Amino acid sequence: MRFLTFSDIHGDFTAVKKLLATDVDLYVSVGDISRGDRDSFIEFMRLCGQKRVFAVPGNNDRPEWIPNYMNLHGEKKTFMGVTFGGLGGSPRTPFNTIFEWEEDYAYEVLEKIGYVDVLVSHAPPSGTVLSLTYSGKEAGSEAVRWYIEEYVPSVAVVGHIHERGGKTEKLGGTTVINPGKSGAIIEISPGEEPRILWL
Image (cartoon, rainbow, N blue to C red; front, side, top):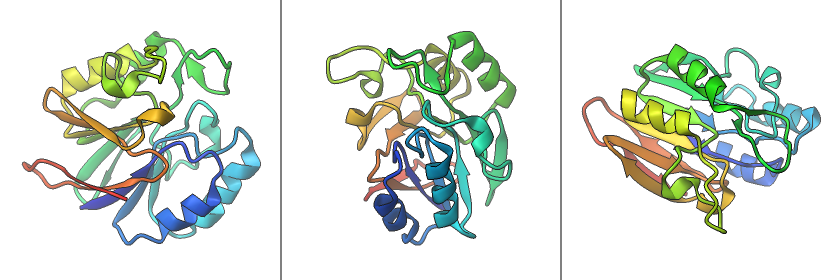
């Protein structure tokens, strides 16, 4: 199964059109779809049309903007035999954005999900290359790291830290990837290492 994943679009609909023109089985947004307003999210939904899309909200999106059939936040969905589950939002930021939380909330959401093949989390796991800002500040989630170490999904797709887009890291048995705005295609098959094709 091949899915195309991307993060932190922030209302760049030219990028969205290009991504959605790529032929894959599924599209997965890792949050911050909008510019912090519902209108830009509605435009994203219009562009998706009839395509099969899963998404989590970013810290600049509201969870209720995402329709149930698409929303992975706190949910588990299976597509072509692959299970996906997600966590939207982010740990507290200096910017007081729309959807921020304390770690206790993230632990609760992730524990409810249980094992999935693909974790979709706007927040990256703490203590990794993917969780560091340009200045070296830690901006990841302890709960997301705990989940990956505890449940060992095949793939964890993350976002939030724009400057880490296009990077990947191995955390135990899990391939963790920040696809960034440019996106990546991930091929996943039971019992095999996931393959990443950068766009």
